[in-house]
Length: 203
Length: 203
Image 1: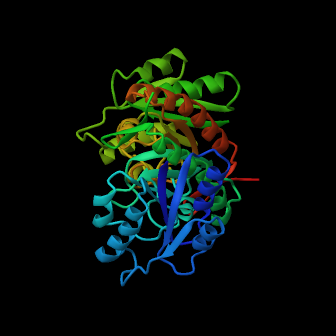
Image 2: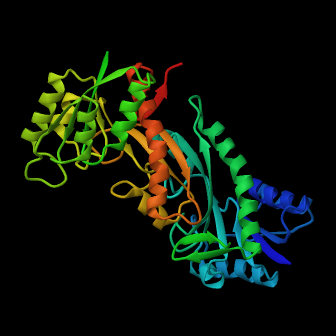
Image 3: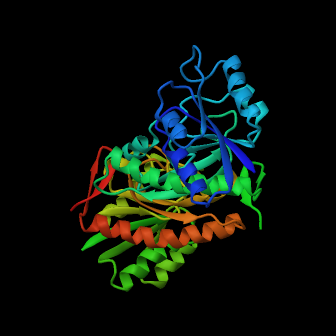
């Protein structure tokens, strides 16, 4: 069975989308463990409710990344669970070398914009302020950069004339909850190849 | 009658899309004049075939822009024709101050990407090399920057697994030929407002 570990800092709606896809039999994988850097993150409750091992690991002194020793602690848990893929779901820190070395092209993230547009925080708000008419979400492999690894799936979302950041974000999340299980499905079925930075689905 | 002047350097497929929309009665405007910086540009032949005044104005010594005197010469022709809107259609030079002062928020351009991604040349190729899954085109107002004025319309184009730059470019152009007449229609009907950099269609 293909095993994933999920790491998140917030409410975990993408974790729920993945868990629901598994429960419905649409996604033939096991979610082995959920880790959070936020002690009372709702994602941990949601994992517990579903009988999935959940764990808070304190992030250490930095605000936007984990210290190397802390990354190692995260990696140790993931390795104990033999996860094949690390799935970031609203994890608000940058992944650094300890992680990347252990899971090369085995860490994925979902970002609420059509990358490379609007990297960073509150991408839906950036998109509205820029005035784009087509927004969306991107599932990508995580590499040394921020929001710039090879793209697995993108789904577009039309901006409406009366959109607020909240409304646009909500519609983007609907697409995220379709895209993320789809991407995990492709990877768990060994159905993609990465050439340079271009991800192709095998014939 | 709302009058436009078209400026282009190449084959003029977007000019043809506009002229065809006018001829079909879908777009109630007059294309008053077509100007090119390239003496034998196909866009000039295509204008002549349609009985539209066409004019080559030598670009001067620069490669990526027009000299101020040359910009003035372009502006003089456009003013003589009383154009309400300047439409760039494959014009391979950057518009500078003389032009922008005379036609503030009255110059539009079409770019073969979902801006702000992939500004500059051969955007479809940049998109393929980056590995995006959703590409597209953008109609925007021209301001002091390159490919960064307020966005009027965007249309998305899915990248296919076997895409070549040529194939993707072709499908993007199909969408350009829909988007550009649509944008000119909105402007000629005075149907949009620009707030900061966000373009809204009036109720």
